[in-house]
Image (cartoon, rainbow, N blue to C red; front, side, top):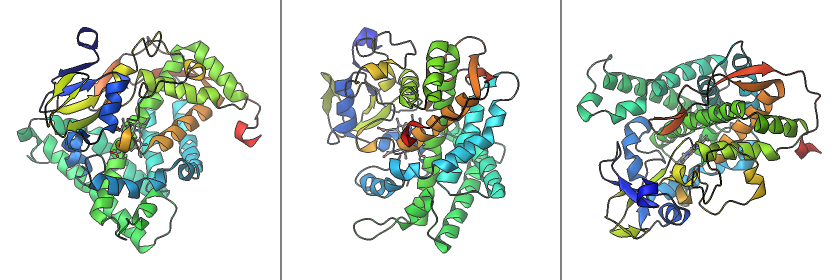
Length: 412
Ligand code: HEM
């Protein structure tokens, strides 16, 4: 559509009830993401409210959004997250043997298990194996049942028609998740001061000295799981799958890591997020009749920064379809030409956490194994709100000879 109609066009897309105006160039994308007088966030994600709770940041419109975001941001700051890197390393080490098992297989299910565990350890502060197992099973069942797909069904089919109907299963699993979250919140209120995102959220106060209620915290936690789980797991799957299919980039990365450098590591992750941003767009609602790229936009229209398309623009990214991490070392990206985490006041708050988790996975995996292809490079499939590898990102892991430990660049 971009080729036929130019950088701004509109289309009808499920589950949006009105036409979706799409911006696919940096200038109009910047307007969508940053011009809050014209384009407002929250409403476009309200279809997720039954899953994450209306109080989650994802669905909250302004001005409440800014107030809650200020309370949520400090625990997700890069420096704070780095203090929890040991917990991420522990999770990766626990799950690693399964990825390295005999034969080839899809990376995504492995990465999903890992991501849930990381969220539980870092965000909820759960480390007890029994509680980890109960939480993981319940969250996996809720997310794995395709809860977002249930929300895309026609309203009558979303109704609770008994425990075996999609709506009935959804309501029961959500109740189980909520019960676990509320139990965790009351345990932490009774015994404050632990080192995790949840404890920091419970301590957070706005400028009037008011904190978040239990229900608000519960919705934020559910939102963090939904926003952080599929996205990070899918990116891990893509990056390992791309490395398997691009031996030159893969071997260069392995050499760079062995030499104690992080330079290619970050560039490799950025390149995977350019080619296959796990979330394909950020969506806002027009606050009034306006225009975008010279096209009229009526009040209440949904407006998307469709960055998955911007990322493939040959004028911004030469040879856009090829996986070439080096390109991020040679040039500085034009503003708003690369926005896999969205932008403006609603930019992803989990960026530092996702980045750290993906970096940790790649460091640990590539130290002991080399991903090799199984079958052809997989196409992209849209799964609720994420772009996933069609067959889960299949690879085979070839064991490496042990590498002599080298000082990490930051430790030199
Ligand atoms: C590679 C992994 C991830 C990707 C690609 C990603 C991408 C995104 C995108 C595109 C948005 C929408 C931004 C906008 O509307 O402009 C978003 C929002 C959000 N993300 Fe992420 N995300 C990732 C990981 C995480 C993690 C690990 C967490 C937390 C545990 C998280 C929490 C959130 C939250 C709470 C929002 C809503 C922010 C707001 O509305 O103020 N994300 N993410």
